[in-house]
Structures are given as C-alpha cells and as structure tokens.
Amino acid sequence: MDADINTNLAFARKNGLIEQFYYGDNVHSGAYSYRLPETRKVAFISENAMFTNRGAMFVLAEDGSLWFGYFGGEKQQVAKNTAFRSIDAGYEKQLHSLVVDSKGEVWTAAWNSTNTSSLIKLNGLSNIVKAVARPINSGLALDTSGRVWSWGGMNINFGKDTPLNASPKVLPVQHELTVTWNGTNLPLESAPIMREGSLLVPMRELFEVFGAKVDYSNGRITATRGERVIQLTVYSKTAVMNGKPTLMSTAPTYVNGKTYVPLRFLSQSLGATVGWDAVQGDASIVLQ
Image (cartoon, rainbow, N blue to C red; front, top):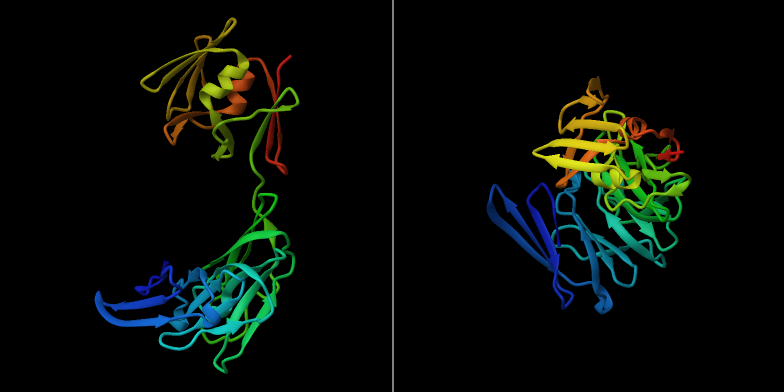
C-alpha cells in the first residue's frame, strides 16, 4: 500500500488486484482497478505524489519487472528484460523517480507523453540496496556496507522534460559512529550519537568499561573511579570534577529512555586519552 500528499491511495490485494482511490477535498471522487499481465504478483507500489502527473503510479512485480500508468489506464512495462528490486516515485515528475536493479545500480525511471519508457543510470553509485527520491530532484541511497549517499538540489523547473539528476555528484554522508577501547571495538548496545559537534554515548555502558561506580537519581549523575569523582546533571553543561565546577561543550541528555553523556569529557576526566577519526567516525579511548 502507498499514499501521496494529493490524497491518492493505492494498495494491492493478495489475489493480485491493484486498487487506486482518489479523494478530492475529502470527498471520494474516483476508484480504479488494475491487474498486471500474465498473472504477475505485486511486490511494491509507489505513488509519492508526482506533482505534475497526479494519479501516476509505479508497480514493482515479484519477478522484478517494473510497470507504470495513470488513473484508469493499463499498466505499461518500463525497461523490459531488466530486473529491479526497489522503486521510489519522484515528487515533481515521474522522471525523477529512482529504481534499483538486481545489480545494485540506480536509475531514474521515466514515462513520457509519447508513451515510451526510459531509464538513465546514475553514475557513481554501486552495490546499492535501497534508493529514495527526495524533493526536489534529489536522492538518498544505502549501499551494502551501510553507507548513505546523497545528491541533488532544489532546482525546480516544472516545464523541463529531461532528468535534472542524470549525472549527480554523489557524496558520502557519514560512516557509522564507533568507539574503540584500547584498540578493541567497544560493542555498545545503543549507538553513539553526535550533538553540537560532540560524540555522546550511553552513560552506563561507558562507565562500566572504566570500572567506575555510578549513582543516578532524578537526572543527577555521580561517577567515581579511584580518587576521581565526577558529578553531572542531565541537560546541564556544568560538571563538577573533584568539587570544582567545569563547563562541558555538550550537556548530557536522554535518548530513547537512556542517558547519554559526552564521551571525550567523561573519558578524559576518568584518566583516559581520546582520539577522533572524523573520516571513519571512530572515537578511540586509551586507558593506561
């Protein structure tokens, strides 16, 4: 099932029937039914508004074939003899829609006024698992190594009939954030996060590897390791180290019910040195 911001709704039944509904100003004003040819079964539907082609819809079949059509018309196959595994309809036009083939390559999928389909390969992308079309004429893609890629811009031209993003400059967004302890990867149950340029990690997991004693009550944290005593308060940048107030760059906070604390400040306060690899997104803690 998929819906768009123009109040269109489409879904596929188990028997292969595709049904599409349109509600104008909250008043039901249209219903259409389709079936893919040769008893093909539907794997996925994508509407996503397609501003200049309202009522258009892509359908990905379980056999990897891709189909496109408008309200009430027969579905036509896009790029025959090509197997696909994901589709996301574009916001502005269907030619800004993105499909991923079985080889992990990304293409723009187009269906124009002359009832002919076309695909244009996006350079610089490989081993892609999923691609998502973003407004306007932009995209995100996830590859098999877990990296996220982005491209595109806000060049809006509703009259232009050629894909604006046919040859994007693809940029890596960010690696997964990791923490190593004395050269060994630290397996955190909850992932680190970035806030205000600082890396934050789950409080208890960090203090446990230091062997620090932790007392926690109503947002007030006291961590003790040997003669070092650190006092923190959630949402406050002021910390107290052995009785002396000091200012942190980022305050402790709550994330999904867990307390997160700034890794560099806490690690250094407990006697460790901290390194940061911005390219790989890895923080290394070394405790002698």
